[in-house]
Image (cartoon, rainbow, N blue to C red; front, side, top):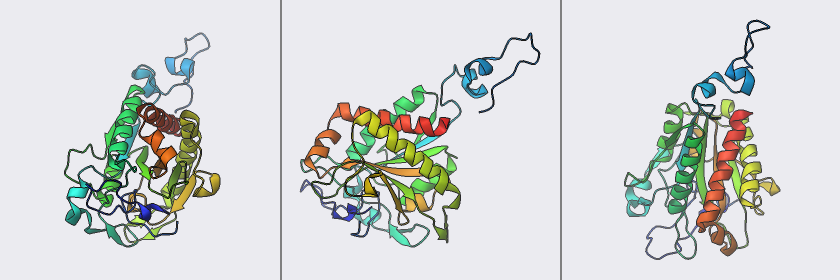
Length: 285
């Protein structure tokens, strides 16, 4: 994403230069209808009474019952130990880019990969409590990756109702706030985003509203023109997706004020809640 190429290691222990927090190097520029009683004197079904879908009724009325949500924690804590592997180029539909990147970190050394896993775990727990089937693209159980093309395939294979890739940005100090990256119109090779552009935008808009409400954070002051939305065509995770998917940059790790939020466990729980609320609002819409 714009500025993400500037991501630098905050701790000398990490030997790789950080390149896009979205898992790729980037350029410098920036339900049913209500049930009805079959007769006037018949008792209404639970679905008619609650407005819930039949699947939700069967599972105790949980709002996300029957839904599959994929969470994609950006990067992997082991990436910095596998430079050869993550630097191999893979097809992103429009060209070839690095398999993955290390991600960024705060000036004190708290890594983006640690942040994304923590928020993803919190988000998973919240979504499961609402009845959703949740798939994590990875849980640091593998030495590095997965590569950006595989991340897209995991969401596609799960036939996810929504996919959110969790990240934190690495822009210049003074650049603050969060933003959601949406897929641009891409067609060619193995990429075709025509069918997911609309629903992905709706998902992104819901996330912007709910994330701001839950965390108190504002949309980024350095990208997205204050809307919290940015459209990109250079991210394989979006280009190769066949299901609604967005990237969420929760804040700027290189800004001291944003870093103070990102490193706070209480704020991270709010961030997870905001994402869960945004997904819920999208799926209920």
